Every structure is written in C-alpha cells, then in structure tokens.
Length: 162
Image (tube, rainbow, N blue to C red; front, side):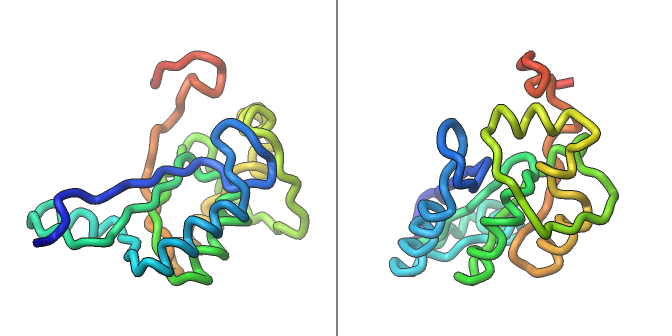
C-alpha cells in the first residue's frame, strides 16, 4: 500500500550562523545524506500536486521547501541539492527580489535578524537572491520557484501580511 501522506520539510536559512531558523550547511548536508541513503525521493512541485490530485502517494517521498529566497539558499543549499540530485520548492518573497545582476565572489553569512534588517534596505541583494539566481536555480531543474507574499510586515516587526 502506498504512503498515506507526504512529509514536508521547510527551511529558511542554510547558514553557518546558528540560532533561530538557521541550520548549518553541515546539518543540511546530513539531512540530504540521510534521505539519499534511505532511498527517499524529493519531489518537484508538479510531482507533489500530481500525487495529491490523484491520491497516489508513494512511499519514501518528501517535499523540501524554502521560504523567502535568501541568498544563503543559493550559496549553500543549491550546490548540495545539486550534488545529491534532489529537488526542492522555493517560495520567494517577491517584494525583496531585485532584477539585477549579482556577482557572488564573496558572501558574508549574517544572523537572521541582521539578514532581515538588510533585506529592507537598498542593500537587499546582499542577503536576497535576485531574479537572475532564482532563474538559474529553476532552470537547473533542482528548484521550483513560486511566489510567497508580496510583502510581510514581519520584516518591520509587525506580524500581519499586506
């Protein structure tokens, strides 16, 4: 009998900076290694929808999701997912995504609080993926990119969505 549900694992930050919603690249790599060794299949958004719509939920499948589109997803998560041949969904907070070209010759990981504070400034491209990186990740077949919220007052300290 197939499985009765599909586990969903949500990530925000894959970063060497600890605390809060951050997990280290080493821990993320351990998650992927375990899934790979146990023969778990990561699903694309299309596969996830198909299985739910057709009530055909296979065993050993999981949906990996990322919220907001932080640059550390591109720097740390994307290469590891590619290495293990795994898929994920990313829900980009489109208000913070810019249509600029970014060269990531140097990346400085920040705490979640510092990342959020920088994301609401004109320096947001230092901590958020621009469209160029999101398109690259989606074009690789590793990530499916979807829209999250246009803007959340959470970044300004208020927890309501516009």
